[in-house]
Image (tube, rainbow, N blue to C red; front, side, top):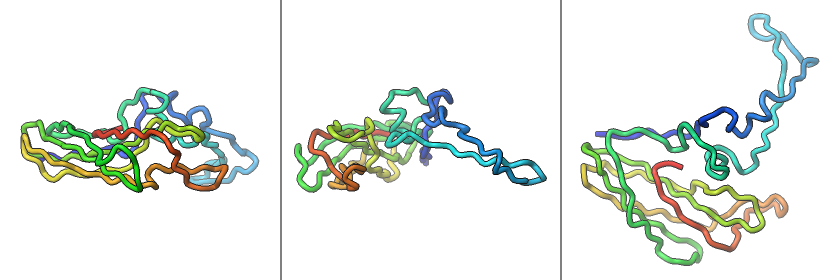
Length: 183
């Protein structure tokens, strides 16, 4: 049986592409130094993170930065294909479901973690190119076997936090659904 383990973070191809690199190591406060472990001087530091909504894969995907290993990357002894992505409705009315057929195309049995991303064309809010909104695991699939996975997208999945309104807001507009093994 082949099961894959997926990364829960993104590894940049170059440190300079890490969004917090320009702010690191931050501001030091030598006047607040203390004696740390083994008598070594410990100087407190403060790092300001300015990424906003562009944290992790959201940054790399939005600004098209190369990665060594993307969010959700994983190895397996088998391979999978995705087909027949369908929505139960072309318009959103409280909720919508997306279904996709996952097929084991490798030579051994295996399981796959399938990820659903939404892409919203923001009008008044800053939004990343895509956001993970769900994931599902297949059962153990033999060579050539398929399984249809279904995802439910609710209104809260479309919402982003609007700091001016201090509320979660789902903007009207077009949302694209993307399915895959990684970001």
